[in-house]
Length: 465
Image (cartoon, rainbow, N blue to C red; front, side, top):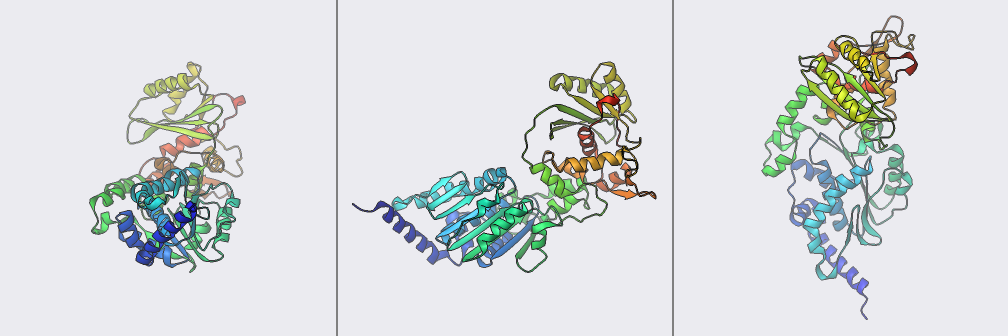
């Protein structure tokens, strides 16, 4: 009887030999002709670099086609460098499975699957694994365990870090062992979120071939001749202008997500962009008591913000504009009837005091917080306001926040200075508003909900003005 496996292997080798003969030195053309994709100039340059250099690093703005080009590179390497092993990871399993591998699956099933079922050849496509033979595959690896990166050896190796800045250092070290021999390549690609760490260091030395993509490098700004559907997939000038207004051009978020630059480190920044991103990616359950933090505004351009937290997870942020204190009070009552808050923490200075007084009358578990009063650690902090912001920074080391640009922009805005006695002092809210272009209402509300007022003290209130 004929050896079916040997016949399939022969068919696979023949098809790969055809690809190699035609496209081995031109992976961009393979992607455009075989995958049928349309690439813009930076994407072509990145693909060529990965195939021609051991290490490639790409720092990019938001929505520049990072994950898409990574998926194209994974498939091109699999079929143009055989036998091969491709290992991919990202900071979270969601990013591995639902972002990068979702793109790989879509490209394979719509562009390659029919070609490769010819003559009985049928690679196995799973959620996070494409297998041609037992020792020839691409796979998505859990970011939780560095040991998962050991033992991958093959004639051709490719390691891909999607959203590379957030990949843990021990994973970086584990993956580095795969690049020690043979035809080994790696791609680190992502949005620059901190001016420290392995991704930042990749752009400081000569080990990596380096690429930088700003919003202003994309076809929507350069008028590069690409189809409209390609332009529509990239960040738009309208979005960029909106973020310029919302965040300000000097904000860490604008530097990172629009300019593709490593955010400028301020020695006086209370909360870093990197810390916020780590908290947004943290995979912990929302369990335990539900609490509410409310930063009250009245009319004008400021927002009233209600932030819900369950356990160590901020679960929801709700905003209202131009509501009077009675409307705010009524909304809190309705929310409490649904969620049964353990604590409701409201700023008490100014108009928040009316909300607190009425909630007390109604018997709700309200805590008014006055940030002008003395800090618990008065030797270290000038007042409760600055103490609460540093408490928020500590909480972000283990808590989880939504991946909400507005919240992150607010949290990364305030800066501190020192008093003549060496105490930490937070800059005035007017100074923060001048730089941020709006009041950090979402940040103030989050700081309130994370604060843990002592129940033995009774009802007391905090204002972050």
